[in-house]
Image (cartoon, rainbow, N blue to C red; front, side):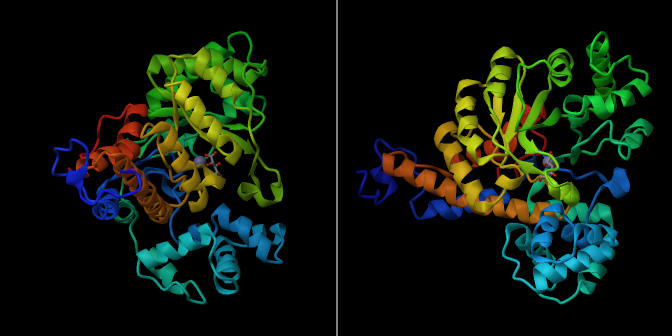
Length: 440
Ligand code: FIX
Ligand code: ZN
């Protein structure tokens, strides 16, 4: 049976379900179901309209995305100092000229901009940005958001909200109306990774904390988290961690993780998202584009999952070398949910490798992707790329299942896609099944 592909579904051992798809029907059915299923985007840097200018959108923001800035400095004689002295418009013009006019935009990030222009039927090979600028200038943000979400097949996105960000915190302190399409996430890097640089902000807000996070500090940070939980109603707490992260290890950050953040997450029944492996500012001249990655020792994660079985960990790792380990740890700890192909992993060839490995080792018990979009329209190409890659991988998985002797139906495929791109995320973000899945 193995070698000779099943001629028809009726040959499937003991098969009774006439809904079984033929081998030829599987790829198109998978594509249909992926296209018609609204996804939950578990990690972005997008903002609801209530946050005004913090929410980035439009052609100048798309072109000055730090992924493109990194590529720009490889193909231009412009120095970082000169580039940062330009206006946003001049920066966008320079990047368009260098990466899209003087060179072929074949990288993942440049292709992304082309895909967005095409999605809005805008010229993709123009020498300048006039047409694109006037198009985006004519959009009103609320309608544009609805349109972009509809085009990208996304129903809801999780934001990244930093309570210590001087630009963002005033919005929350003044009070922000919840937005059902933009979910809040309590981001804690400044507390767990850079405590020595930021403890004074909490002290300034009346929390009795000290530089070394001793004494009352942990209890006061718990009070801080409870106050911000009240204010933000976050769907999870999150932190990115360096490749050098170790646990257990005597640091102020680890003390607060153990004595404040993890207990607060248990009490509030929230997952903690750990994004592990960043090497911040290896080239500070490039600003946001100056971060890199390193292979982390994931035994820190092993220790956290084992020592805190009542905490749920949503984890993404930045190094390719850590991906397989993460899969294996997820087989050992069901309080660990791998999610996304983060940042430098978010390239179709690597997404394919990681996702095939995860399906082989975890079935559908993981969250394949998040967009990490910093600019609104990026969700269009990032989710389009994901659907294209997953269509291939899922079709292959079902073909192999069929060859092994079990047929697959459209509702099997719908169940799997819904789990991968909706219900796993909803469960780990304590979201009720928010929006019915349009194809059911
Ligand atoms: O820590 C993070 O959330 C990262 O995703 C960002 O810091 C990073 O700059 C980014 O945009 C990656 O795509
Ligand atoms: Zn991010």
